[in-house]
Image: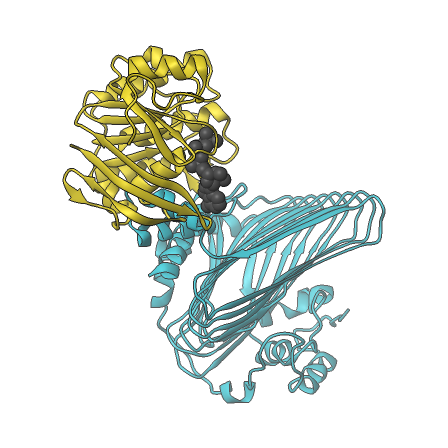
Length: 400
Length: 240
Ligand SMILES: Nc1ncnc2c1ncn2[C@@H]1O[C@H](COP(=O)(O)OP(=O)(O)OP(=O)(O)O)[C@@H](O)[C@H]1O
Ligand SMILES: [Mg+2]
């Protein structure tokens, strides 16, 4: 684990490790030549965000951070939250106070993408102090608006014991670039966090989210991930460590289209007694897209429960989906299970709906929408709405 | 005639299941279809509705004078055919409300208050037919069929596995439908018959052939008392 001295200086050893890792390929996913994306640009247009249903009202309700290309367009924290000690600021300004958290969950030299995030020095720091409950969603938005640029960011989120956070990350682009989003998320004991990611990349974009989360005892993390357009390639494998009596729920719906190549998954390590993990993954593949979906639950403590469910829907003869579910137990009292299924739209259901008056295309559209439905836990209303509209948009894109 | 089936031959799963069946149904007529398990009753209804998974080998089907033999199911549905499924697919993620909305968008709101015909409020937000009880499936199927405002409703065993109270309600639903539509009803037990105001004809299928067609009041008691053996050739029995 990395540790950082008191000053707001980027620690030299971490920087050194990052520099040495700049050529290091990721284990999974297609390789991106990052050197091609090192132009500098300060984008301004955030138009692509509004397509995700995120406008002024959302951004100014509690707290928000908006970055376009490399420019931080906005860091806003409502006075009511500020007075409770809620912090949101560019990460580099917070370096002095985040010592043990900095690169605490992800290795800076894991691959060239993490290295790039460290070297760029951009991203946001969010802290919810002990026992503070922030119900209204906090938004972080990352937009690429200039073609050919890289947007490497490192975000660090600390939710202290007993606190509550509903975080929404919206990522979109109007031009092809490279997005690297490192997120380290610390969930304190008894804390409650929902983390919703809605992504919509332009054709040709490569994205490499790197997420690590740690759940202290008795806490809860619900993670939702909807990706309407993964661009040219996407590789991500969030890793979540789950403490005693804590629970982690992850639901993701991804639409792979065009010739995109996806390698996506979630890895949960249940390390505390009585911890729980549930990972639901839905993949829709059309055109000539190619998807690998990995889900993994490792049970390292007694009385833990884990379940993964991966379903793939093939909308084209030329697409491919591969699911790789893995379960590993080191405790006889752990209960782990997985389900996986890949198929096309059910012929019998199409036929049934046609007999009820729907054309074949209408029937397929309805069935795809049904496939994309995920169970939503307790969420602030605007987040639930954003998720539902993103899922609807995804289903329309899938069949349009 | 509203429906005319001429010498229909149908294959399913590679085997010939319907082996030359003819059938005519006039406007506002109610017909009963009986026959042993596996004799081809459901397959015949599927062929009339145009569902996938069965192949028409020979013969043709006219609806309202128009040849629909090769038309897709939704075209038939929009012409006024609807079917109550014996084994409808379970559709995860698509709720009953979703399907009702889709039907009402195409056929308009129902003319009658269907609230007391079928009790479905607790099912509205559940995935269609996923985990429904046998009786709930029947109620939902009859409701969706009514919402399509059919001119001819194909009802596949509306009375199997239904308690007396629901049977009475289903009977009322069918009577309501019969005011505007023709009905073709498959039944094994005849349980629904005592609730129906009017039944015109009955048909018996054995091994994919129509062995008997005639007046319902003559044929149905024969079948219910003696089974299917020896029906063929009896008085009042025409073969089709
Ligand atoms: N898709 C199929 N593949 C193979 N066999 C089929 C298929 N569809 C129907 N069959 C067979 O055709 C025969 C007639 O089936 P059908 O469902 O029409 O019978 P039914 O008269 O409705 O019987 P029941 O009273 O049991 O509902 C059965 O032997 C059935 O197994
Ligand atoms: Mg049948």
